[in-house]
Image (cartoon, rainbow, N blue to C red):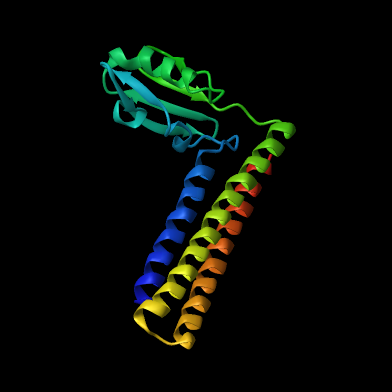
Length: 185
């Protein structure tokens, strides 16, 4: 029973850390990356479709994302979808391909992005701590229901705390890397 609780706790904490990682990938750093357009949906014949399912998305250089639509009729809807996503990008089309220049970030915007990174990280840490609290409650309930010893419960709590520390450290490392990426000029 303790092993099941620990396994579930580890999986939940891993998912919480992954959510933070996914959110940080979406934050613009002044460098082109295809992940910047991951949330964009295009009206593909009446259906909201992810951008990467209607075009080949690639990075042509450090400051430009290139989109090659599979259907030439999708160029205008893709441009409109990128503009509607309010990402601060202005796509440029040459009739067959769309280029999305990534403008450099100014100092003020960089500081705002660092604050946003820290907010996502704090949300992730709160989620991890909530998972720890739930796991410890589960261990206490199981101790009574399953009749295992207090020592076993305490060992389980120690394991949960080790997991918590590990995942919080992972989130802190993600923040340090993202901050460095944002503040690089």
